Image 1 (cartoon, rainbow, N blue to C red):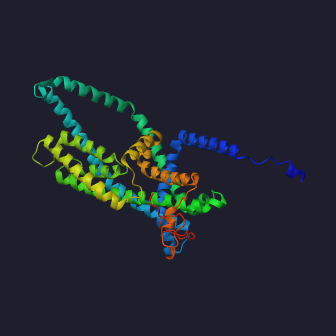
Image 2: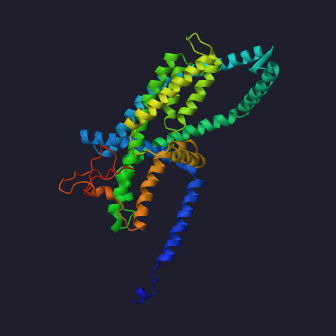
Image 3: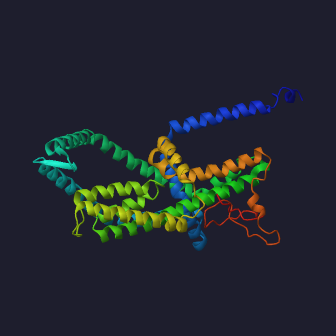
Length: 398
């Protein structure tokens, strides 16, 4: 009894709020300061998220443990990627060599410009040698800077390789222990809110699932289409431009513009590989091709493949890209859209709770007489475990 009287009194609401805010601020600062350390963790989590359904399917079909199925999946994946890397790398090296030849031809072209004047507009001319000197000076600075940083680039490559190895190990353990991680996340909330936590995690899982599965498929489709289009119009380095376009699909709202800038540079400097037109006319053909593909991509490919769950207003996406680039670089740009969509789901829940509204009105939209099937407990497709039905479809439109 005396021992119970010596216990400190419980914290009041004000103290709990202050401590919660302090902990949140400290956590946010730690994440920002150590953001580079989180890069392999984030990539590992992404890989695990994509491979978890496959490992679950292998475990279900072969009746092996989930851990052993994960080992099989990673071994098969590495066995496929390594030969593909050996096949694709020489082609990419040839494409880079062609880019080097383009640079040499550009320098030779600049030398020829120095012999006369260049007409920019009717009646407005500039000395060719002046322009050549300025460009040569800029290229010389670029070459000197690149040479001085060769050792730093070598060290950076070593760090990248080491981070890649760490990422693979992290992805493996995340995939093997996904059940434990999900159970831990669902148990974070108080007992009265665990049903809400399950629904929120399910909605967030839908967002990221649609994004990753859709973006991977979209990147492959765009790579094939842009490679074919580049071959069709005679754009130099078509394979490299196709792969670049596929990767840039992860940069929502800005990827098409970046691809067009690179393609225009090649068109104006090198021209078409077989079309009998001037470089300027070919550049216009590249612009028209890019505009047609962009319209097709935005109006058909993205809605059909990625879906509308991550659909956001372009202004919101651009603001998210700026913030993501500031906080996490390229990774922040690529993950800006699903992150904002996730915050939108959490924000709607908080708003509903603050104003005493129903946080999940969409769950009551289904007819009560129609029995709703059970759905997996916040797991990617292919999971073996199921959660109790919540009383309606949890696939809320994010």
